[in-house]
Image 1 (cartoon, each protein chain N blue to C red):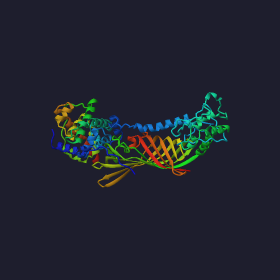
Image 2: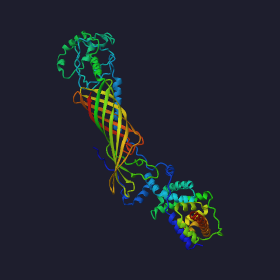
Image 3: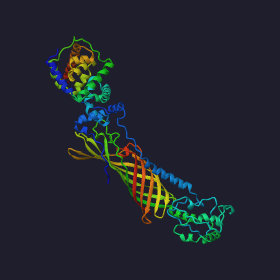
Image 4: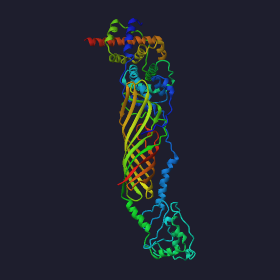
Length: 197
Length: 402
């Protein structure tokens, strides 16, 4: 009983793009539904990143929200080279770092006097630790150690890149990393001992 | 310094933490939305087609002028103009009272009542100054004053014009028989008494204009709880809209000759096609959305012209509608999927228009009601109504005199 009126214009250029590229293009145009799709796909992973850096869920929520706002505002600058998730992850890491700098949490020193490497015991003990325990252990690290540990071990930054980002030397970055490993080792040993006991 | 154990330790931690996920509270997206502000898409402005917009306004103005401007006689409702040429018959038993200062309705400059001029009787040239003044209740009417009334004659009665000498005599005879009231006023009053209290049953359908607006506000798809995947997501801003249609059953009650009120129940259907995704489907596809509404209209009618078979009227009112179904027909890799959603809230609208009715039999008439309708923004799903709230409608159907 209905009549179909003349067809609306089609944007055929979008047909050649992949679904992810199409979503990104729509986000660049400010399409809220596309932004929500990207948010739904990235938010769980990025929230874990934020918790690792901030050390608690409340601060991590703020960083997550701030990070997504920045992401959607800067999505126009995404060139398409490389992984979109990797590009997004950098935004969240930078957002977390800016927040930590604002609160002066990144108090780093060059003291490496008590740093030592991971022993064989702790290396095997960590195999027994699950994600939640490990996340808690990392979150409980002091902010400076936690930041360097996250950036080097999990994000894969080099010490030079960490030094440039945090305004410290390579040596300081290495020492902070060793301190982080040491503390984690102690915590793992304690946790392993409790589990065995 | 770093050693192999460190590397093993780092690799293990990385393997666990790199792709870890955490449950995100819904409030985070709400804060993001608030920070991002309103969507970039701007609503399409309602387009006014001014000729159509003026039609009901002109009809209402004409109706008001006719209703207010037409003088009333003896307390009866305003007389309606007869369609077609008139034939004035003077009832000798009932004297006709024609006050000097009152305009006879039939002598109004109306196309429906052609004025046929005839030569004035030579025997007595009408001189107004020679005629004694008459009040509105005077029964006797001098011959000179009878002339304006007798000047309005049917074109089908040339015989009366061929005998001008007999005209004055007839007018004298009519004058000699005094009339206490206007016979037409009495007849029209009786007609009005018949017209009032009449109820009609109407069955009709309506179609609306569709200018195919291109911009879309939002996605038009029901919101789901934050953190869950929306079943249907629209991509882009373009939709193709079908012409909306309505079917209804109504009753109309005329409580005076001119005024009536009508209500009923109507079903409306709107369709549109857009590109979008269904759940986790990797590719967008053409999704067909159909909306069904049930509504109750309420209109006030004013009879402008009433003939034996034809009537012209205008009306104004509104409707209250409730969406009962929003169905999405989605082609997927697994076949056609039908996704149903409810529709929250109600849709209010206002309308005004003209109506034309033709009586096939005394009991059955056909009618055509072109109108202008405006749909108020009520938070309803995307449809032609939200994108083009001002629409021209064409309703046609049958009316049964109960």
